[in-house]
Image (cartoon, helix red, strand yellow):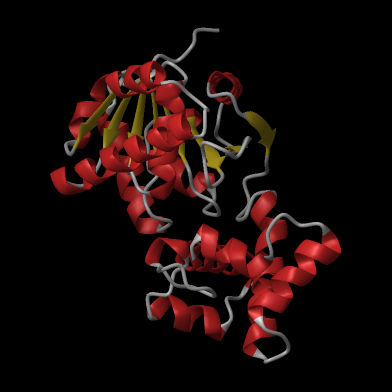
Length: 286
């Protein structure tokens, strides 16, 4: 099986920058598309800062950082992705936005064998594959935050995804130094189907006044050996991202355990999104 050498990434926020970083450090030629020049420059700074942290921690050398940056290019023109063999969209967890990106990529990417992957955490892959003329080459590739550290990728083939596409994507997962599990194409896949109800239960406990955030988190960390409590994990994931995942799952299954609590809605509306905004269930502004 031929290895992927030319990879495209759409979006360079928290997840997109991590995907691009891992890919360029794995020796791939990576082209990142962002909405405009300002966003592209911010994405480059985010990746450079992460690589510099890797040097300080002894994870890579300056030569390795420079080599990675030499194979990383940015654009604010989606059309520049025309020559890519594999493109991963990593825009915000918004169904309409992801549909628009996948539909555009289908028209732009010239290689008839190219694969279009989505980094959605909850949106059914079939919904995205249906807007393309290559549904057999559309697949879910769900990375976990922080991407450079988390080893797992959920591979999510739709009913229309070909076996060859799934195997080529599994091969790319190995190129990136990650491990794959195959998940069903249902909202939430494997991990979020189990994780989101747990996180929402913790929010409801705070909302009801049953316990304080720090007591909930310490209880799960010290009592259940979790590396991070549910509310700190929500702050890491991003409350807006968790809310979007929960809403997608509730829309599909109509199960009350997937319904975002009112407190989560209020915090997102107030801009308290967690670490990325400086405040969520905890404060991160020093």
